[in-house]
Amino acid sequence: MKTKILDYIGLSAATLCLIHCIVFPLLLIVPLGILHNPLVDLLFLLVGGWVVFRITKEISVIWLKFLF
Image 1 (spheres, rainbow, N blue to C red):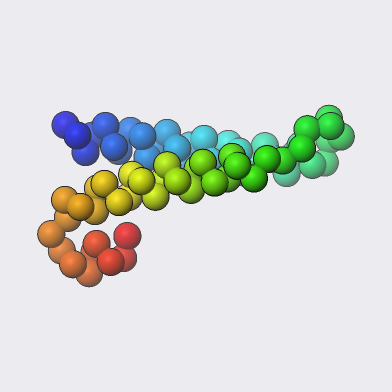
Image 2 (cartoon, rainbow, N blue to C red):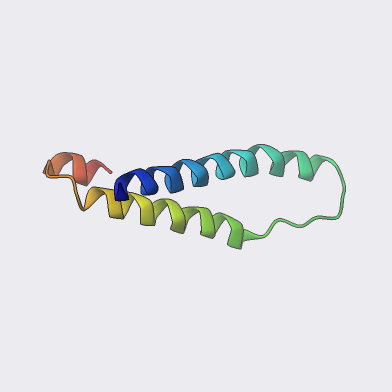
């Protein structure tokens, strides 16, 4: 059950990251006055890294754990 929740968190973070990466270049083209905040990128990185770390704690295959 715990890994299912982590899978949902990882999937949600990846989806939000995808939306962010698609929308941000459009915001650069259209002058709306919205500046890019690098903390958003850091937040996506930290959430994704945390999910991968938690899931790989339960993997017993060493090379797969190293790959992730």
